[in-house]
Amino acid sequence: MKPFLSVCLIVKDEEKVLSRCLESVNGIADEIIIADTGSVDRTKEIALKYTDMVYDYKWDEDFSKARNFAASRASGEWIFVIDADEYVDRDSFLKFKTNLKENPVDSNILAVQIVNFVGANGKDTVLNYHERIYLNNGIIFYYRPIHEMLKHKEAHEKRGFAQLQIFHSGYMENVIKEKQKSKRNLSLLIKKKVKEPIDYYFLGNEYYQIGNLEKAINYYKKGYQLKENINIDWVKKLLVRLVNCLHIANRDTEAMEIIDASEEVFENLVDFKFLKGKILFNQGKIKETINIFEDILLKKNKLIADSSMDYLEYLPHRYLGELYEKENNLHLAVHHYSKTISINESDDLVWVKLINLLAKHSTMDELTNFINNNCLKRNTMNPLRLIKILLMIPNKHVQKLTRSLISKTPLAIEVEKALILKNLFLDDNKDDILEFFITNNIEEISLILSQGIFQVVDLILIALETKDDLYKNILFGLKFSEPINNLLNLLFLEKTNDLSSFEEELLSLIIKNAEIHGKHELFAS
Image (cartoon, helix red, strand yellow):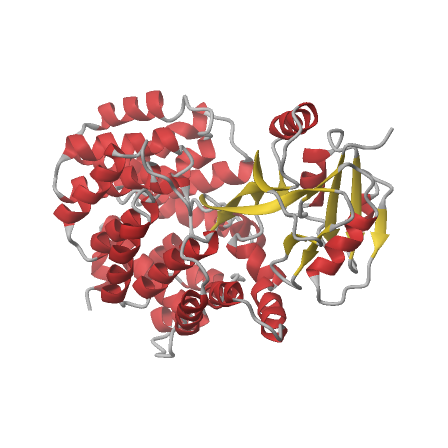
């Protein structure tokens, strides 16, 4: 019997993520076809656990050719294209396949929504649609060497949308840096001899990704000038990204002009309304910003989000929490912070803002009850996460609440040691701290510091306060992911070498923590 749904991938050195991807489709796809373009890690070994249809393909700097090669090995009625750093929800994927099989569609090319996790830890998302499903009739194929698209040889495309999401982790900061995606993408885009208007949008994206705002802005503007139609999907995204670039480049007047013009064309799109609120927020215009975000929440069911669903509710509540806190409106600030958490419990910074606000207006007993009833009982909140949230709050009394978790909750040995040491520091118990460092070697101390509880900032403050050579020797003997020798030389040897941006941030954090812990005299001069 002919397979119904073939899943096709092209891969190279994807051992970290490939299992996640294949687990999500395994047993639902009728066949899985993988074209490996030159892996030197365990990618092929992992792939062969899920399918015997693994083929070597010589990479020639053309994603479409590689995708079409994989498709040429597929025998299913439909082809579903996914990348190794993506995955689907299995229940949703099964439902999609069943529905496609039982209710044939008139379309021969289907787009799905891609949920891109972005930023340092992927807590933010960006949405876009991409055509990933097509009829395997031999006359639909991918074209373009990069940012590939589907077309019909006879120009008989019938495009539609599938009720399916693909989750993508490839735009997280660490992945982009590790894979050097922007360098690769820029090379392919620049080499493309005949450029379409959309290519300038993609060039803008890559230059934005590497922080070259001027080139990003110029390419976005060129792409917009060459567009065929303002209602094309990528044009909306270009305008949103252009506004972001201009704002980051401190060109708010231009950004606002584009927002005002875009709101007239895309009146039901929340993106431009949200960006206007964000710009006004950064300009300190509290009343105007409140009006915009309150209006978004009022109209959220009538508005459409193109770039991110967070613009409709989650982020407006988050901003309103901060705005009402600035206005000293405790009730509304707590209301909006609580709403933010109800939408996204994983936002640690909002927990910090909420608990810090409550700490200013509650007794410690009331705050403890709140933490016990509203934090610890949540499935998403584990003891280690709560400890780190409490320690981010610039209040010694709140930080000391972590000691109740030492005996009540089973913690890893290193975490427990770090938490005990942190509380000794909070109590200013120099004798027991000294005893700890005398009885532990540099490797054990390094392991304690890596837990993110008792931190190098705390150790530096102790060293500055006690002037004990033991602490100085430990600091100079530790290995850091980013060098801080210039900072240590400045603090302890009074050498005035230029600090790196990381060292400057660390120094600022040290001074801030000195104030929190009542040790501001260390930097009085």
